[in-house]
Image 1 (cartoon, rainbow, N blue to C red):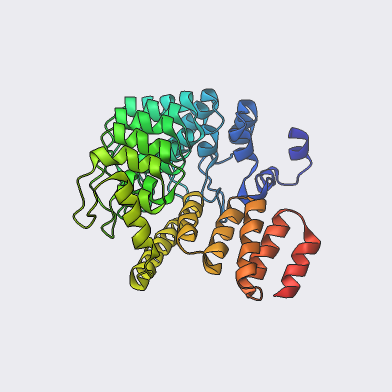
Image 2: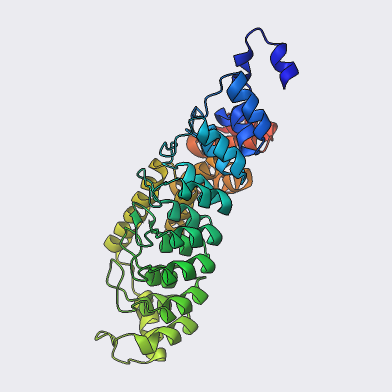
Length: 377
């Protein structure tokens, strides 16, 4: 690097070098834990450890100091802290240096930062470090944060509690730690939706239904439309979940035959009726608004999941287009293309669908296909 710097008329031009997304050389050195390179860039060239990466996407607003937290190298983090690293500065997604350490699972850096007096529940409007650890399935940093008295019931608009975040990403280890640490098993997201309502409503979470039931989740708290978890499980014809919930659920007056078979038969009968159009439209609007809000917060990973929930209820070209954009911003080219193609199947000549497909092909470096999609637009 020194040779490159010497060849420049202005040595500080080196800070304009780097990767896409605004990540510069000091960011790269910091995230790699290259202490000597960091020293050279900071001490000899005047590099700013709090310089935010420009642009949009996952790196927007990220500083070299924040990047160092992901290296797992305490000596690099300490050096940048000693040279002005801001412990409370946040990136475009509301993540501080502690958030970055927690979400990557860097235990030693997390403990080091906490030892420097960083508030364990520091929240710049997008959730606490515990939320970040839970939604990234980092059970080890979840444990450390709880040991430092992180609030397991703190909520963030959109995802709700850390428990709901760990459930969304199917991290049973994180859920166990959170409940042991005092998480309320009946507090969920802002929809409103309890963890038990979520698990019984969408399927594929049977082991979590069992776990939540044993942990004391109340099966008599309904969803926003008055459906109890046992009814949601029955509508999906999931006998196993109905059997789990039956002895814990209070009888429902509208179900005359209060038995496992009776509940499932009643659910099948109700499902055969014409859909309540008003309720369906309300559900679709609520779920889409929830996902759109997460997108506006630039939490593309969780927004992608939320659009997926909306798609499960009522697929549409708009929802696929929106989820495709989330995946583009997460650098998931294959996922973005898959959703863009689904979008085009529903609305073949929609300009936005063509653009989404072109953007996905471009990310995958499939330039001819990208050009073809743009021509279709």
